[in-house]
Amino acid sequence: MKQMKQKWFARLSFIAALFTLTSLLLAACGDSTATTAPVATTAAATTAAAATTAAAAATTAAAATTASAGGAVTTIAPIANGNKTGVTDTEIKIGSWGPQSGTAAGYGIVDRVLEKYFQMVNDNGGINGRKIKFIYEDDVYQAAKTLPIVKKMVEQEKVAFFVGGIGTANNLAVKEYLIGENVPNVTFSTGSGALVNPPVKNWFGLLTNYTFEGTVFAQYAADTLAAKKVAVVYQNDGFGKEGQQAFVKAAKDKKMDVTAEVPYETGATDLSSQALKLQQSGADVVFVNAVPGPGAAVVKEMDKLGFKPKILTTFVLNDPSFFAAAGSAVNGVYTSSFTPLPDSDDAKVVKYRDFMKKYLPTEQLGSFSLWGYLSGQIVEEGLKRAGKDLSRESLVAGLESIVDWKDSIAANISYGPNNRAPQNSIFIIQYKDGKFTKVTEPLSAK
Image 1 (cartoon, rainbow, N blue to C red):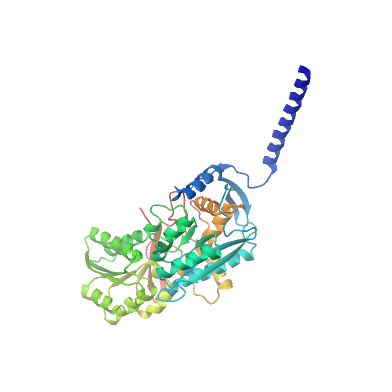
Image 2: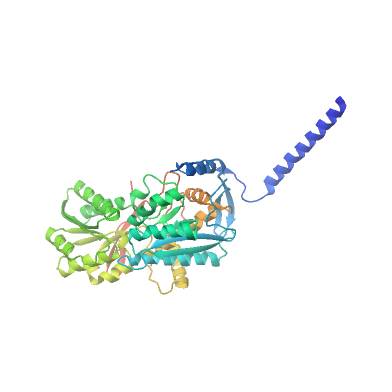
């Protein structure tokens, strides 16, 4: 009996050893999504359900390097119990909102570019065997209309996530709902600090921070334009106030006299009274912190009054739609950008122009179309890194792994568990006689 037990034990040991050897061989020769290193976990979840999912992601997410058309891409291993709403074996459903009409209609090109960017991705075979279905609706830049659109896309259309959503007030209007539904909101088009500080697990910004821009402009007004008196006209909401407050603070720090702070209401079309107040202020420099329609209106009204201060305009006005609407009144204005100039000979910009020529030949080149193009690049990269087992959680992990990424049209993109603001620099340019000239090198936020 003892000898028989020893024989069975020997056989079992041999089978166990064979199984171990087979597993090692499979790991060495097997599928390319095998994990090699842990990925940073997501930020603390805002609900108990989200916390459970985040904990699962933290224990199962890992990185692996696989080949793709664009070169080596870091991918995320499957995340246990990931939410696959909007994802099938053949499709990824993505939603968006933005103004296709109204005073901020110039921003509508962001969604139109995204639509064609994803068409290009599909034409090239999709991502990990899936094609992208992109849907967007016009909210006329009215926050009250954004929430019903978003609820419809989440509850009826069953989108996996949102991309490129325009507007500070609009994003704030849907923030609580999307957090509660655990739906990612990716590359939203606003530089509001309120949406990225503190970081929110499923939220990933795109634009340079408005506080940083307002500070840079005030410093430029004092140090380069030698201004003694400054004024600001701003949209009376979270977007307008953030830049206005930063500009005023920095101006006072520079010992300049802030002679007027003039608000206008969202959707306003007549800004003649605001222009008159700015003229009466006697400012040397006026910072216009507005969206395209009202921005063009106030600049034209100042010109009609014969009021000719040096004008600084936020980067959310840096687009042909604004310059065309304002006409000759914008000659000489200063603005800023975090993307290269559209006519740059940089190879990445040439690629963008080739894309526009093929997919949107009737649309104007400009910063807003560049925003859409950059959003598309980031989403494409995030989806590739999320891997074949795509879920909302793996998308978040994939985006968080984008650090010091230099393959997009922007100079540098960085996210992370504690970072949802990927842009940290801008440069100032001047628009004169129909041409843009860089007047500073990129300035980085401290």
